Image (cartoon, rainbow, N blue to C red; front, side):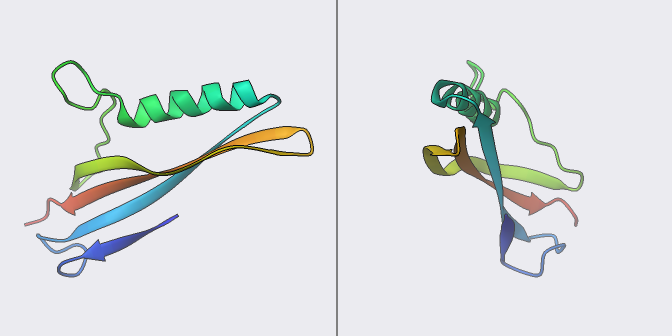
Length: 97
Protein backbone atom coordinates (compact mmCIF):
# COMPACT_ATOMS: atom_id res chain seq x y z
CA UNK A 1 0.00 0.00 0.00
CA UNK A 2 3.01 2.26 0.24
CA UNK A 3 4.98 3.98 2.93
CA UNK A 4 5.87 7.35 4.35
CA UNK A 5 9.19 8.35 5.87
CA UNK A 6 10.20 10.83 8.50
CA UNK A 7 13.49 12.28 9.63
CA UNK A 8 16.60 11.93 7.47
CA UNK A 9 16.64 10.04 4.14
CA UNK A 10 15.54 6.42 4.60
CA UNK A 11 18.65 4.29 5.06
CA UNK A 12 20.30 6.81 7.40
CA UNK A 13 20.91 5.71 10.97
CA UNK A 14 17.92 7.68 12.30
CA UNK A 15 15.41 7.13 9.49
CA UNK A 16 11.86 5.94 10.22
CA UNK A 17 9.10 4.70 7.95
CA UNK A 18 5.41 3.86 8.29
CA UNK A 19 4.58 0.98 5.95
CA UNK A 20 0.97 0.13 5.14
CA UNK A 21 -0.22 -3.42 4.42
CA UNK A 22 -3.70 -4.40 3.28
CA UNK A 23 -5.20 -7.83 3.78
CA UNK A 24 -8.46 -8.72 2.04
CA UNK A 25 -10.15 -11.86 3.34
CA UNK A 26 -12.45 -13.38 0.69
CA UNK A 27 -15.09 -16.05 1.36
CA UNK A 28 -18.44 -17.47 0.28
CA UNK A 29 -20.24 -16.31 3.48
CA UNK A 30 -20.01 -13.22 5.66
CA UNK A 31 -19.22 -15.40 8.67
CA UNK A 32 -16.24 -16.98 6.91
CA UNK A 33 -14.88 -13.57 5.90
CA UNK A 34 -15.22 -12.30 9.49
CA UNK A 35 -13.55 -15.45 10.85
CA UNK A 36 -10.58 -15.00 8.50
CA UNK A 37 -10.34 -11.29 9.40
CA UNK A 38 -10.23 -12.27 13.09
CA UNK A 39 -7.32 -14.62 12.34
CA UNK A 40 -5.44 -11.88 10.45
CA UNK A 41 -6.03 -9.36 13.26
CA UNK A 42 -4.78 -11.87 15.82
CA UNK A 43 -1.73 -12.69 13.71
CA UNK A 44 -0.77 -9.02 13.47
CA UNK A 45 -1.74 -7.72 16.90
CA UNK A 46 -1.89 -10.60 19.43
CA UNK A 47 0.41 -10.29 22.43
CA UNK A 48 1.85 -12.81 24.87
CA UNK A 49 1.14 -12.52 28.62
CA UNK A 50 4.45 -10.64 28.96
CA UNK A 51 3.19 -7.98 26.51
CA UNK A 52 5.37 -8.69 23.47
CA UNK A 53 3.83 -9.41 20.08
CA UNK A 54 3.03 -13.10 19.67
CA UNK A 55 4.24 -13.10 16.05
CA UNK A 56 7.43 -11.05 15.57
CA UNK A 57 8.15 -9.13 12.39
CA UNK A 58 11.92 -8.96 11.86
CA UNK A 59 12.92 -7.16 8.65
CA UNK A 60 16.69 -7.36 8.03
CA UNK A 61 18.41 -4.11 8.98
CA UNK A 62 15.33 -2.59 10.65
CA UNK A 63 13.55 -2.65 14.00
CA UNK A 64 9.77 -2.58 14.26
CA UNK A 65 8.77 0.26 16.59
CA UNK A 66 5.00 -0.27 16.45
CA UNK A 67 2.18 -1.86 14.53
CA UNK A 68 -1.51 -1.15 14.61
CA UNK A 69 -4.79 -1.59 12.79
CA UNK A 70 -5.19 1.51 10.62
CA UNK A 71 -8.50 0.74 8.84
CA UNK A 72 -11.06 -2.00 9.10
CA UNK A 73 -13.84 -1.73 6.53
CA UNK A 74 -15.83 -4.79 7.56
CA UNK A 75 -17.76 -7.19 5.33
CA UNK A 76 -18.74 -6.23 1.79
CA UNK A 77 -20.61 -8.42 -0.68
CA UNK A 78 -20.41 -8.39 -4.47
CA UNK A 79 -21.77 -11.08 -6.76
CA UNK A 80 -22.11 -13.65 -3.98
CA UNK A 81 -18.51 -13.14 -2.80
CA UNK A 82 -17.85 -11.64 0.62
CA UNK A 83 -14.73 -9.67 1.42
CA UNK A 84 -13.33 -8.04 4.55
CA UNK A 85 -10.62 -5.38 4.15
CA UNK A 86 -8.10 -4.54 6.87
CA UNK A 87 -5.12 -2.17 6.65
CA UNK A 88 -2.24 -2.39 9.09
CA UNK A 89 0.49 0.17 9.73
CA UNK A 90 3.98 -1.03 10.71
CA UNK A 91 6.48 1.60 11.82
CA UNK A 92 10.15 0.71 11.39
CA UNK A 93 13.46 2.40 12.02
CA UNK A 94 16.81 1.69 10.39
CA UNK A 95 19.43 -0.19 12.40
CA UNK A 96 22.23 1.13 10.17
CA UNK A 97 24.76 3.24 12.00
